[in-house]
Length: 276
Image (cartoon, rainbow, N blue to C red):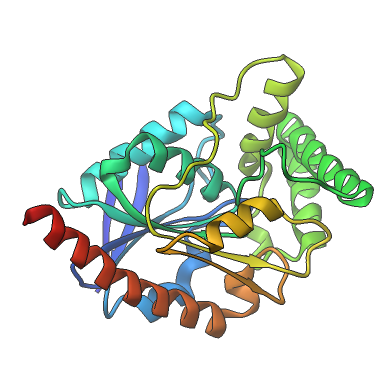
């Protein structure tokens, strides 16, 4: 049975039972509904918590968030629903960007992470082809402009880009108010402001799943090799584009479910070691 809590004007959806809580955080231009299939598969063993990013639901007031305000919101939600125990993060797209930063700032509150398609995206080791650079810059500045324009034109621009990229959600729910991460990113660049992000350093068990069929990757090859070589961490590439969980849901769920079961045992062993 689904429970719903309202935390900082955000509807937080909770389903399932289990000792471990999985907090699912989406990115652009999705909502909490992105994770429907995963919740159905995991709720018999885990407590699944998800919410739409602020301002992403139709009818919500248009609002801007930067890194600090987003991490403050995440902390308020996780403090409210975690029952005093560390949580698992299941992240995609901007959910990865913000979620990784949250985990590094609050290591006592996150005990493992599943990251989908976004890795060390800001690393100097990440090299894009000329074509990938052009696409990346073009679509992100397009979405920044759509945010600034707002209204019907901004909404049309946002839906057009979502359609081009094959975003899996209901197009009628997509709007320009979802684009503030791009405004945060690029306005900081143009104004020469620090983003405030820390270099990616994941110290907990970590599963990284990415789509192999994109024009360019959002992670570097050295980082991928490093993650694959560390005990407790795993890297899997699937023949998909960006929305891996929507393009190959059965395989995605199998990989995530198997890794969670394996890391359940690892976390239990660590708990015994820490209490001995």
